[in-house]
Length: 136
Length: 136
Image (cartoon, rainbow over all chains, first blue to last red; front, side):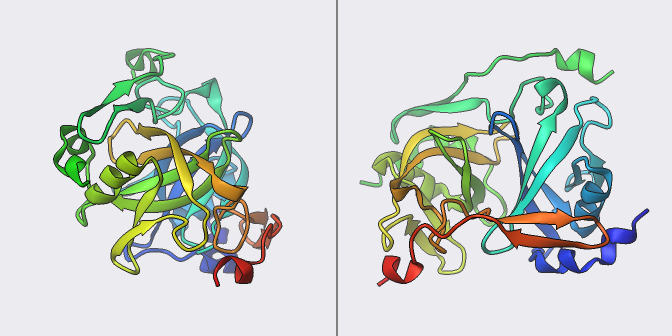
């Protein structure tokens, strides 16, 4: 099952001092940026094997198959690596179109308003599904 | 000029142990993800003041006004913060539509092809401008 973990293509990724790489998840059909997370070598291998996003949870220190609790799985459409080979871009099909644990489409729902001296972050995107009903 | 650096809205951002926050730059008109970089408090304040992306260069350990050498400035259209308040999304107008130092539109020009056991990263996007002519 974990046959991919020693694969050569994983060596091209420049893992940081914690063995991690930043990952941007983007919705393939809309190009919306959904969320940002981290992967270790194991997580990226699993992501390719499963065809679904598997991240490394830095807080829980374990693999996190996105949607395992909420059902909001991310089906992988395409995987990209940047010019420095230290950032991954995942183009996904987002189940229910909800990526955020708050029940919103995207995690980036706070928008800066104002100027440098006097600004604020305003919530501008709606909750699509009550998180209470998502995480039982 | 640096009046914004003590502003309250900057306190909402959860800076990491190095005082940095990951930043995703996305082209506003196409929604394409252009690049990934880091900002410190100073860089984010300057970005808002200037209306142009100013990052923190971790390698050069100094502020980096994107495009200062290449001319490939990023005009800021919108700034978003994620649910955990530790990642910034910058929606920009990319001058010349070239964000990457390789002369490509996006830094994410390498696409994964294959499977977990036997995959490779293939360059799939064209060079729009010879980097030799960009960096004199």
